[in-house]
Amino acid sequence: MSLLFLLVFFTLNYHLQADLVADTCKKVDYPDLCLSTLRSNPRSKSADLKGLVHIAFDAALAKSTNTLNQIMLLLKKTNDPIVKKYLTTCASLYGDAVDYIPQAIRFVGSDNLQAKAYGGAALDDALDCEDTFTTGELGKRKSPLTASNNVVKQLVINALEIVNSLG
Image (tube, rainbow, N blue to C red; front, side):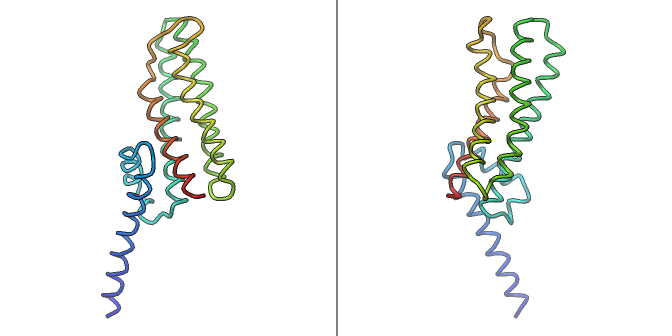
């Protein structure tokens, strides 16, 4: 009898967690990215809403770090002085974003306003990097970072919207 109870309990718990991820992702601007981000992380199976925020911000941090590494590689390859200047600006911005996201994570649940402030600063950094190329003071250039900037933007927006669900 107790084995049957445990089986039912764990099956029910699994479905409730799957529903938490689905319900959470329905409320964000980029639900497909939210679902793929949260479901790809094994921690989401046992996470509460606060845990899902951590996973979402962790994904944003990983993509921001990858983007910063991409920028450093592009800086070594480019010969265009304007693009080099814009990439240098983006490197500084993403350096800040990589510092801000762990701060956002640190405040989740204890001071959600601070979490949103740090997350918002990281979002601004991704947006500002893209704007550097599209409205640059030295002339417009095609951004080699558009795809990465967009993913970082979407990941951070999703994380911030999940923070809003915490109240």
